[in-house]
Image (cartoon, rainbow, N blue to C red):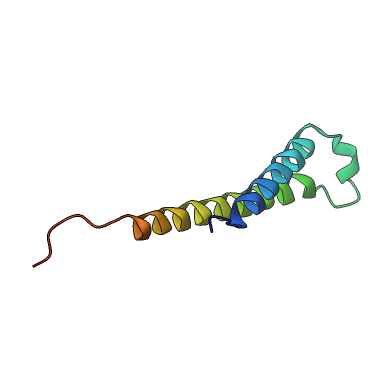
Length: 78
């Protein structure tokens, strides 16, 4: 079965990370006065994006291993 849950999880976290990071970059800077100037939206967005990319890389690596395992081996056996 070719269902790998890491692909949709990776895409979802990556998309949310990009949205949150863009909001952090383009949003009003006055809302960060209460958090001592820390742009938590950008920081969390970058974290979500990094996690999403890691999930996508793991899914890609896992599918490459599964394809290599399923491929018939070439060469003659004695």
